[in-house]
Length: 205
Image 1 (cartoon, rainbow, N blue to C red):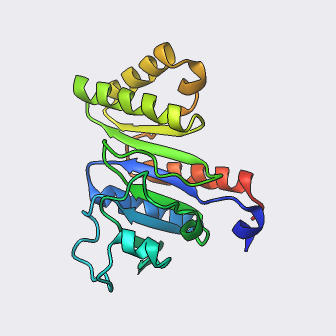
Image 2: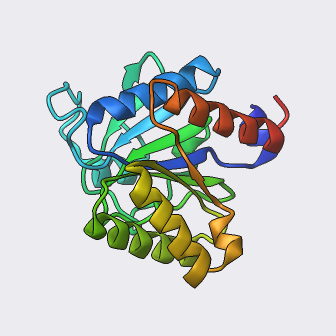
């Protein structure tokens, strides 16, 4: 009811991480802050073995206006491999959640959520390829969604290089929207608290 009254969409979080366990740690951290999440399995690596309870893929579910989600302790999960920016808007499905967390790959674009705050979390290795790849994706994303926040985690040297490149070539306004997700067991808890704080600031809870 709060979300419908405010006419705001859920917070969209696109995670590009190496391990599926990282995704579950993150949505669990969101759950501990009091946020209800929909975890979208864009790559088919999270719930491929789970009973889908439906023979319909995500396109057919959109056509029928009924998503077949799997109940989870943190909210719901949705097996939707291959979903992309060309998909029908997720706005209606997102109404029942505080966050929509996407298990995205490097080649995936931001899934549009109208009137939403977007955060991208990128896990980087300390390599030149990772730096170039991350910078290229950030450049593309900020043109599509100028207010997107980017959290960098993983190799500290790579994260520092990406931030420096963004400040030099994309401007200080973009660089200010890039933050570090510190390594360690509390990393996702800190990120969840950050998102929960933005949630509180945007909506009356």
